[in-house]
Amino acid sequence: MSLKTATAPCALVTGGSRGIGLTIATALVAAGYEVIVAARNTVGLPAPLQFMSLDITDAQAVRQAIQSLPRLDLLVNNAGLAGANTPDDPDDALWADILATNLTAAWVCSTAALKRLPDQSGRIINIASVLGLSAVPDQPAYCAAKHGLIGLTRSMALHAAARGITVNAICPGWVETEMSAQRFEELGITREEAGAGIPIGRMSTPQEVAHLVVFLAGAGAASITGQALVVDGGSSVAA
Image 1 (cartoon, rainbow, N blue to C red):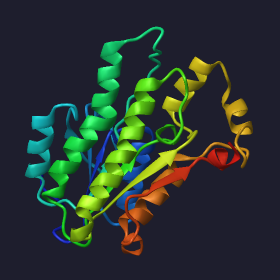
Image 2 (image 1 turned 135 degrees about the vertical axis):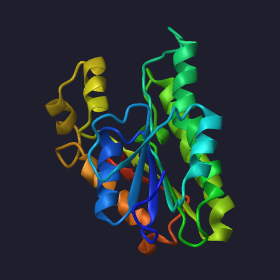
Image 3 (image 1 turned 30 degrees about the vertical axis):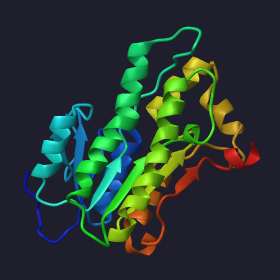
Image 4 (image 1 turned 90 degrees about the horizontal axis):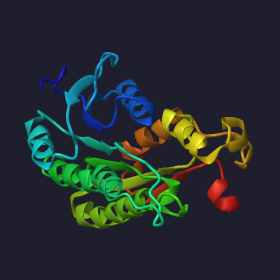
């Protein structure tokens, strides 16, 4: 894969073909990054994004892909998978898929990225969830994966600190995405009902999450590391 310039920083965004990931990728382009979107389906994504067809649960393929990049300054572990899997009705295959996508893939991507990221300016940003800090009864796999992702964030932040590389997590609550719409159907609620239960009276937007990614990637956030920053309109405070 060839980059358009030799001087612009390069970002890799996993799961960047739709929703929050695509919005993050677009915001990073506007901030001056060359952006590579890694996803299983990259058909029809807008220029100037560059595309990498990649199954992030394939560890060998991930390591080879990251090693092949001409440059890497920022990794955004955004790819995610959710699903209901209660202890009363366990689905071991779903459990394994959710852990593999949300947690193990972030570990593989991050360990490969650390070999490429530059000292003092390298960044890893993990898109976790408020369910990495709290829980719901019908999604134990997703909650476990996102709790694990925050733990991974904190541990890797300490590991990378001596090199000046920061590692942070963003924990969105309800965000205007297709994944949220699917969750509303599972819960039997409407978008309006979900928004009304948030202190600011609405759901967050993908753009608000993306703006935080851009900030954390910049020089002004060089001393922010190991943090789990919540974007939920005040819901976790009210709780």
